[in-house]
Amino acid sequence: GMSDEDALRQLRSQAINTLDFGAISVTLSARFTYNSSFAMRIFKGNNFAWYSVAIVAVLQVFITYVPGLNRVVFGMGPMTGIQWGITILMMVVVFVVMEIEKAIRRVLKAQGKDTDDKEKWIFDDTEHPDVNMDLPKGASHLNLVEMTH
Image (cartoon, rainbow, N blue to C red; front, side, top):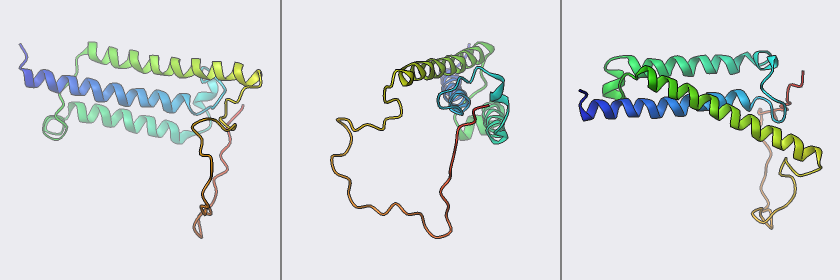
């Protein structure tokens, strides 16, 4: 059998890989605020999103399997096929839950609800202090827009 320390290393690998691959799902779903990511447009537009996904995935596999790095630095160990299956399943679950939330927000927005959190509510500050929100010289305001086609 496996020692308790090796089992703990495998569980650490399971935990960090599940969290990081779940974060990849968040990255892919959140590219579109309201529009569904169950579309071919997810593969177009922002190549840097795909570069970051590839880098994170490669680094996760790297720190999971490279001897010394996994054991000594991260206290991790190699994962089983079942553990990878659970990781991928949780990645899909995170993606689907985010897509369901966007679908609900689309319906609520169509009904005129404040899905962009623009209305004042109980947890919002009652008074806004005088804060200089200007950017430093040389910085620019990013005008980020959602890709709609």
